[in-house]
Image 1 (cartoon, rainbow, N blue to C red):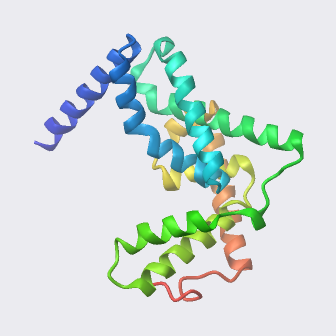
Image 2 (cartoon, rainbow, N blue to C red; image 1 turned 60 degrees about the vertical axis):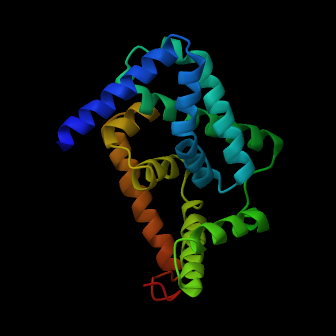
Length: 208
């Protein structure tokens, strides 16, 4: 039964992509609706900035709209879409470096974003104190994530947060799987060292 449901879901996804590739505006809109949150979340974790994440997501789907017809292998749509998002993130990094506006950890987050995270978390838990600790843990982990190299951060986000397979990450980044695994290993090792240096543990913030 589960296999049949999965097969039907894949067939529907392929049909949606085919209609979108043929120029169906409604199908393209549906793709945006289905994938916007994931692309935004990837971009947000990469920059830790709502405005930049929104801009990257917008550019990603504009590019998708213009180039979808050229996609030959619909089964690689996910990695193809992440390729566009990664390229948009990298272009934004280059643009900021040219302008001398590199991202600073002291600039991360805003009162509005903090409020949104608090509201979203509070809605899931009855215990406000536990909800606040969840938000605190997420912020600490994000700050540590920002200390990784750009290449390591890309891979860690895709694997640990987005759930992509090594093959899909390799396709998205256009490198070998061994390169992805190497970046993942060194990224997680560096992240562990950063956490230890900051003395961040579950016990440190009372998280259970």
